[in-house]
Amino acid sequence: MDYAGLTAFVDDAWEQSIIPCLYDYIRIPNKSPLFDPDWAAHGYMDQAVQLLEGWCGAQIIEGLSVEVVRLPGKTPVLLVEVAGDGDDTVLLYGHYDKQPEFSGWVDGLSPWEPVRRDGKLYGRGGADDGYAVFGSLTAIRALQQQGIPHHRCVILIEGSEESGSPELPDYVAALRGRIGDPSLVVCLDAECGDYERLWATTSLRGNLTGTLSVDVLTEGVHSGSASGIVPSSFRILRQLLSRLEDEESGVLVDAFNVDIPADRLRQTEATAQLLGAGVRQRFPWAADTGPMVTDPYEMLLNGTWRGTLSVTGADGLPAVKDAGNTLRPGTAAKLSFRLPPTLDAEQASLRVKSILEADPPYGAQVRFQADAAAAGWNAPTVAAWLEQSMDAASQAFFGHPAAYMGTGGTIPFMDMLGQAFPGVQFLITGVLGPQSNAHGPNEFLHLATGKRVTACVAQVLADHFKR
Image (cartoon, rainbow, N blue to C red; front, side, top):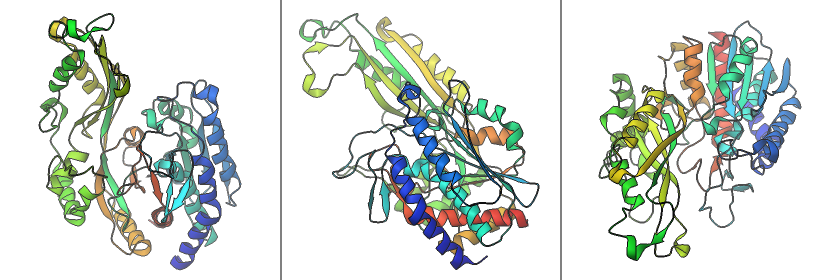
């Protein structure tokens, strides 16, 4: 491999082709079905997938075929196939649906208008993970440009990942024959501990989302006459959450935690030593706010292997400027649980419902309605060839050895693939590094890292063929 030539080729592809298309992609508000139930009528999903389809189809790649696959009532999937020089298969995965806008974008930035600034491309969905199909196909094209062989590659880009991938099982079943039996899975939807090396994800937490609602009245009443007699729905909601979470420490009750494997503890310790204060500094802290724990090792374990609860939304609470002296009839909160990688998400969902709805305070009407429960994932032991390949790629294109870390987010497809293809190897990596802020305001794609990750994927595909 001509490393300098491949680096130049990838850089040119990003600058001349990928980044301009990402501008157009970011401008499309194709929010995931969970956040836009009327996605079909709005047409943004079709607009986004057609943009990606057009770009892919224009690439000069031997053995390329591009198709948008549609199942009734489901967001379309982009399926790209590239014939290879051998009879093995690599599956490359990403998604094109997006999280909603969120608030707090700084002046000059917004979710749907791309801005390039200081080596970063701002806007919703570029890093999470609209760049995936571009990076995957460019890696293949870079190999062919140098005459380096690779096995058959299948690129699958879905449209419901940010909703927990509820539509993906049906697509995988429908496309099982065309996907084949991959021996390697490459996913570009993960985090990176810094922008100095290739990061390989070793685990993913599961995710459970749902709505907890508490009703005490059929309509709002004067707070002066009712308070002290009618219990506050907000206070009851706080009581219920305390059944699951210690409000002082943020630790979930034992039922939502697991024994952490010894090898993951060792890897986490090495990553903590590597990143140090960077574990904390990746977040945009307000004023003097500090982390829940101060030890980087414990921070990493909290964020990758321990269960957590976040309240991500609420109904029944008027804006502060509109809040009158009224005792509200009810409160509803959107709950988001991150579950340990090896915890059964469906069983956790049933357990949460049982705990929250049992013996409601004051006999209030309490309901927990789960939206989605997605399994976590713990990676199999990395094959020697892949470990060596990732390290060589990181050294060649970043100048530092590869590193390993668990990820606090959820990619349901990985657990699905691990069960469907026992023994398959995984390269799960990404560009979501310090302050890239996927799902929140000011999300950005670190462009230099996107280019380097693309080059690293090319190296791994070449080594996969040589193994």
